[in-house]
Amino acid sequence: MRAATCGPANQSMTEATVPMLDLREEYRLIAPEIDRAVQQVLASGRYILGEEVSAFEAEAAEYLKVKHAVGCASGTDALLLSLMALGIGPGDEVITTPFSFFATAAVISRLGAIPVFADIDPRTFNLSPHAAAELITPRTRAIIPVHLFGQPAELNALRELADRHGLFLVEDAAQAFGARWQGRPVGGWGDVAAFSFYPTKNLGAAGDGGLVTTNDDELARRIRILRQQGVSSSRYCHELMGVNSRLDEIQAAILRVKLAHLEDWNARRNQIAHRYTQVLQDLLGCQPPFVAPAATHIYHQYTLRTPYRDELREFLAVAGVETAIYYPLLLPDQPVYQRGGYPFRCGPLIEARRASREVLSLPIFPYLREEQVERVVTAITSFFRQKAAVDRQESVLTAANM
Image 1 (tube, rainbow, N blue to C red):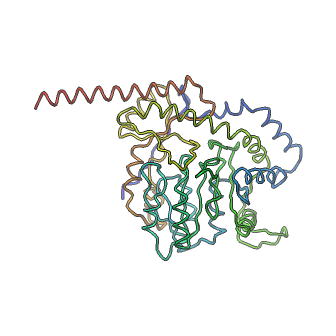
Image 2: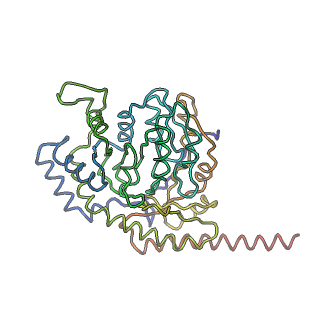
Image 3: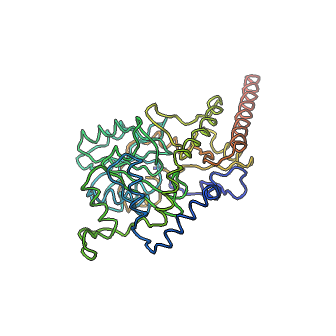
């Protein structure tokens, strides 16, 4: 195993001319709507599981084309509640990706189950169905693909794989609210799906928040009970060993406002991504994001890959462009797993390890100004042109000394 090292992967945005994100600008653009929604909740005196949560759940379910949407306290809790509702527990194996945010694996371990890390598709960075298939054992209970950076995993292949082996399919859609596979929204392909409304997401709250979706009536019933300490019909009657994980009214009200803007915001992200790709695809040594033909990418992150990642990042920082690395350390290499307290299993992770050394995410958010976009592409073009010039000069010197 590679030595576990943790260091800062993200730059400070205090001096960046082009920041990774600017939530203050988002608020400024829709402040009257947000303020009005929040004031209505405060005036109502109903702050937990009231009309705003119910309304948001209904609107989210309609948008995602699913039967049930259940609000909860965070994206991590959405994953945890999903696995709890499915009965995942000690000794069970759950196949997932090593190239994701820590919560994807942490919820498996928290339940006493065993994360099994399969390699990724080098083009999409998502879980490889072929790699996942090779790791299925009699102890496997579920597969958790992550729709990484806003692009759906190969849902047809993963759904077929899960069905063939009698496994649950759990979509980690934390970064993909609004993404589609074959024109159909993510969130309804699996037995259950988990979304995050962390403020940086395409659809983000003003704090933590999450959502679980399913088309299964019984799973929805269990998730609603589990999110509220296992309480079912009677307030002090606890049917299941649940948790306290409720989406509050203020966050639901804010999310309802933002949901109405989401399609326009995602369309703007795609415009920016198109401009980046238009320039990057012609640069030697730089690979823009690949978009699967069946996918509607919402670009939660615009993530390129290059063997010169660290040099490029340093160059962009000097140019005033903030960047981020998602993710510099694979999940099985995290110290908490390397110390040996939580069991896990791995297949060969050749592509995931290579990606962790080469990925770099650029600023992409709906209110990024055109001049900021051009500043990014100009800086990247300058870097690779300089790199090419240096390489040519070194080739000439090498040939001369032969």
